[in-house]
Image (cartoon, rainbow, N blue to C red; front, side, top):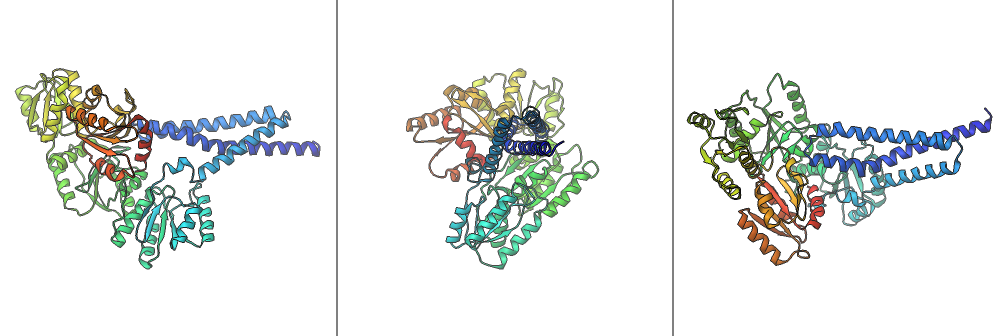
Length: 568
């Protein structure tokens, strides 16, 4: 092989390598942003567990790798190898542009996609919290007298290291000191950085801008540290999730109690620690749960959480559950109570805390006329019970029997709502399986929103738009027609409606109509005018964990409202 031939061969290999790498990275970024992320969100909206989502999404990633390699080999064998230099130049030029554009789009935090997910800038006396600061913001901070930056970006994450290097250089140029205290978006190794933050807080009176990438998850943890160390009350705007990967999470803001399943590594940080939890009550048992107990002991130590273990026996009794509740109520801290993933003890806890009583018994609770449907651990519905059945149901905690066979569908919602408001452990007698299912759906909506991750609320097609499920008890959708108050809202047990009114799109007559129709349907209504920062009015309304909240607004505003809620 001559020297010129060798040179051309190595040139072809070099061009092919550039094509392969730039296509893989650049195309991969755009594939991630515009294919993988929306698809994953769609699966989340369907109520899939994270394990199931990960199992499916890996095939999308593998598919992209196979596609990229296939295109690269086709490029080599049909373009480079056949000396089509013009086509080769166009091809590699395109992938270089793709790579450059993708990298810029991903690393430039000023892009619309990133900004739409960023948290708000929150100012305190000494500490201001927010997202990644570009050079303009750094200059502004210096002009306003800030002494330094506390960055929580982690150089161990490839996507954050270039941002950290860029920030360090820009901050030095404007005269700000950068304190790098890396944190990860899970609990594991954050305790060291938290200790350094505490020392930094106590050793001087300087002003700092604190940030992670989006200014949300990691920043909220530091806000809590500042609140604890300085006795401040910096607002942590956080919409408590009601679904974890392993099951439903219930919370009582007024009692500082949360309860649910064993969190994943990420959920410990983004759902439990971020929500201000300080004390963990574990219901796990030695033996079957030993490895999870050991892992939890390490996790709570790393994240400075107090751990109390109160193992429950199986089957669990209401007396055992009450002991857990009584202990939790003695704590002057925000507490998270959990088992692994059995919903029964958690639903009994939820009932005891909210109603001070609970139904008890196995899921396969059997009557002479058939198995009833459980509605959490507050209600049941089924066929007409015999006298013996009534005694059995009463021993399980049933306080009231309601014969719904004569109640028509139009009045069923009102009847169930009255029973919920009376806080009576109720057994509903349905005339047939269909009515029993209707009762269960209405009662579940009024009590919990959904106990199946809200899958029944995903993409409901209404006359003027489609609904979006955010949590098992939070739904955003279009304006309801008069008929849909019955066929959708009452049928699904909507507990309350929050009406977001835009003066530019809706009139005072619209507001009057909504109020009148909601009253007629018996559904509580709150109206918020869309002007300024409406989070101050909206977020407190969404702290009500009991029952499904339907946020209703003009269909054209739904994307804006969805994006707004995802920030919290």
